[in-house]
Length: 198
Length: 154
Image 1 (tube, one colour):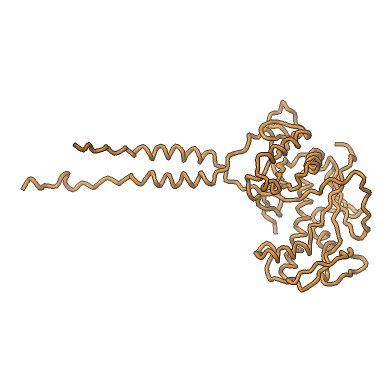
Image 2: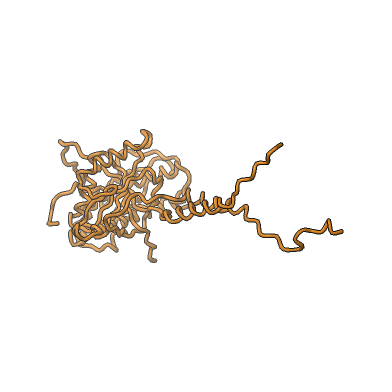
């Protein structure tokens, strides 16, 4: 006599699944982390001497402990910073190894990017960012943000000019690399010094 | 012909619930996949600063977090403190923390490890600079300043 196997009652399956569902609903955090990505320089060798950089190739940005800004020796406001950095890092003619006397020099070795029409000379200009130990993190991020915005806008302009679209819309890795190398993130953060009180 | 009378007459049949578990399972899997467990309970208050030029942090599994901010419980003071994992730490604990993070990942992934600094905006740069110096010493060069996205005012 064949005994029929009674079916397993699946009615409670929904309840079990519900329980799990609610657990995951509660523990879920859907927020995406966003932020400004930077690369730290490797620590300097012990016996390194100060690298001499010509005055015209550096834009000094200082932030003091009262969150006040000084750009190249003059007090400044954060709202002007982006335009000034853009003006400083701008590369007027990327195909020329020379630049005007009052502008930062070009790098000695050209880079070869057929996508940008042959050899390009990136600017030697460097933003030197220095902050006090008492500077607030908020201010520091605002300054970093303006610097990032200036570089992004310059890249956008170059990208528009050669590829007809914004830098963040580029998909071709070679194009992205060409733009990146032509307009590098030239931000140098000074070795911290203990100046001022906390 | 009473023998062939329909059972139960013309009552509407109940809605079949047999596919309910499937629907729920589908939702369940969706949430299981999108879930990121809260890594650690925060002991410090983090109000991130806002910025417009933010990038998304890719590959969460390769990111280790360093929290810096004023302690939530006031008996620990109001000065910004560093939190690693689930406890307060000092700057000197960071190399150990990064080393542990490296150990937990494959050789191939170690180069891609990013350190995300979640710092309260009232924090002074002094402690952040110390942390950055430590990260430089140990060779964790990829960092990310965690910021909230601000809609550009135009």
